[in-house]
Length: 363
Ligand SMILES: [Zn+2]
Image (cartoon, rainbow, N blue to C red; front, side, top):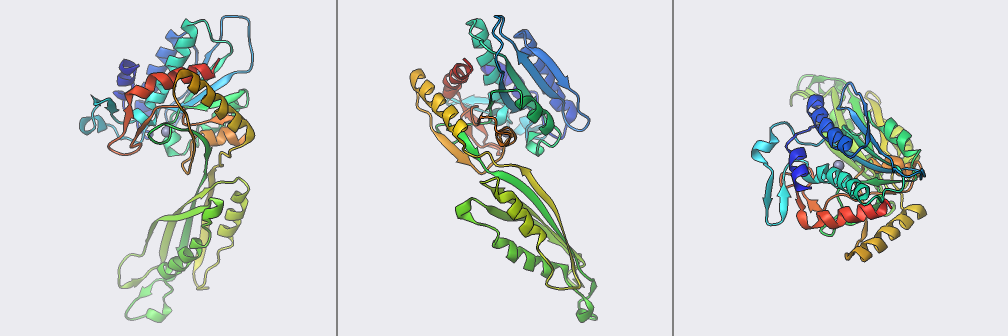
């Protein structure tokens, strides 16, 4: 597993570099073919191609497939390996994308391989890896949903949560909004009273956004980026903000959306444009998901380790499949820390037992 992981990490694959991600897709496709998987490459224009591999049992059993879901793109630019090299030290492996989520991809292939070698693959397994997860999965979403609809359950190979690598049974939904305010420019000294500041108007709107947050309901609203104006002696004609929204319950999506679209300008000479919306629906902790987790927990106990469940505010492609009502278990990949950060690493000792658990969950 470590050798394969090293090979995959050394094929750098930033989301914004199609050729690079396609090389990672080709590598995993070749490994899949050597496991007698039926490879289907879904060509993409903007981002890397999407890889769909179907592993079918030799026996006559057919059954509903299971889906193993992940992505091959990373947040790391080409050349990152130079200052953040593959490094195995003190039981940890460092490197770009090692945790999020190249180790998860290797775990999936190894789990399938184990079942094949034991002649224990009892139903079809579909491995679906996309190339635009780190930039919102806009191109891959339709395929993810289409394939998921044919599956009994979805196992997402994103990293586990925390030191013990808890499986994730709930994820918040994620939305992105943008406010654009247009005011009236004027000289701040000569013509102050004829100006209408887009910046002051935006500041007022941002104060109103504060009230959209409802921590008890799991709703957070974060104006994470603001910009506007041209010079300090010009009354700003334009200002904008980008806002990240998280919701725990699907039912709150419409409410938040209405709140955004009800915003009106205090300064009537200004205009406000609201754009954006919900990108990923929440993955809610429904009964079928709890049952799936309980199964994993008892199988882990048989394998000799304890498994916890967790919820997170971060989104993944599991949000899409869970929202379709397909039982989805997330965080089944590697254990480590520092996803999207320069200290990203996985803990080696968890690789084998968690891969065994993944294989057992496919029986
Ligand atoms: Zn990821």
